[in-house]
Image (tube, rainbow, N blue to C red; front, side, top):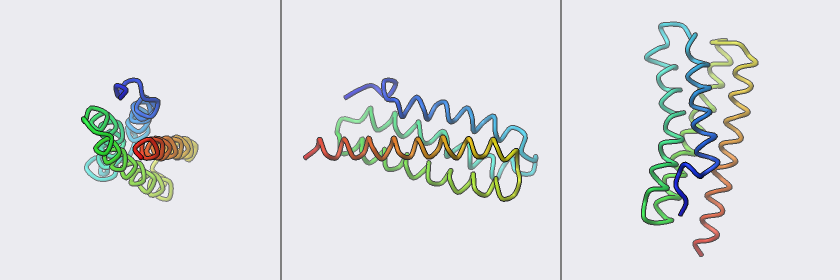
Length: 120
């Protein structure tokens, strides 16, 4: 199997984590232990689970960690929606983050599908 650093989805998730950190930098201070913390953890979790899964010795384990990463991306979709509705930051920044998140969700689903197909 490839190293996690060779996976496009891992690289995209790392870039996305940076975006989320920048996006949440100017959120209200009272959100630092709420929405900001949860968004940052979810974003970091995507890349972390891809890398941990890639380091496992089995395709089955890798797929399981990719599902966890996809769950974190789905969680982030909800957190971005809440950020948008509560006007935490500029709408165009949220829209960009939502679009990037959709790309990551699609990449994770495609990789899961590919590994699942190759497993049979």
